[in-house]
Length: 183
Image (cartoon, rainbow, N blue to C red; front, side, top):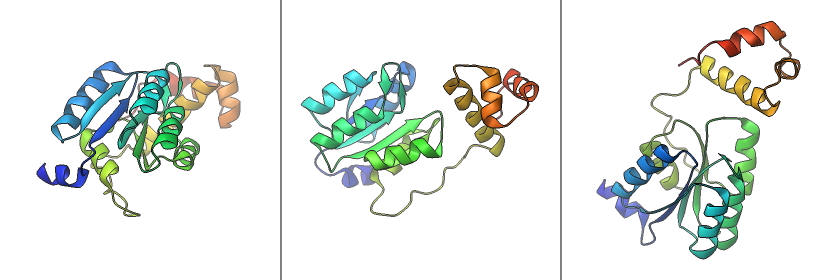
């Protein structure tokens, strides 16, 4: 724990942006225990306002927020503070959004559920060194299910359109959607 504080340096400001209130509260507490000076926002507007007035040294931003895309907050932080270390979180792990997040200036990209240790490791990772692999990565079935759910949401929950885009039979898709998510 003391090692984390030494790695943080003088500026320990951390902005957390997520619209999942219980997750945001838990993460804020955990990050404060790790030595960060935490500020929270639950929207793109709130995150951008804080980024413009007090640009943080570190940030953790959810990709999908109720009022828009978390990448807008990443851009706002980058404009004011090019050296900030930013981790983008999402419940919908997709390569395209990971690439977009990194191009805009995110330091790393983590799929939810990510815990405070994963997030701290990603924020403090030095240079090109990759953080250690997660202790409990998603199963292949879970990744597939997440992808199907994401496409389903992007198609406004239209089963026929989702099946067409996934090149899958509509009834097969309906069976998958009717089941619980795999572990």
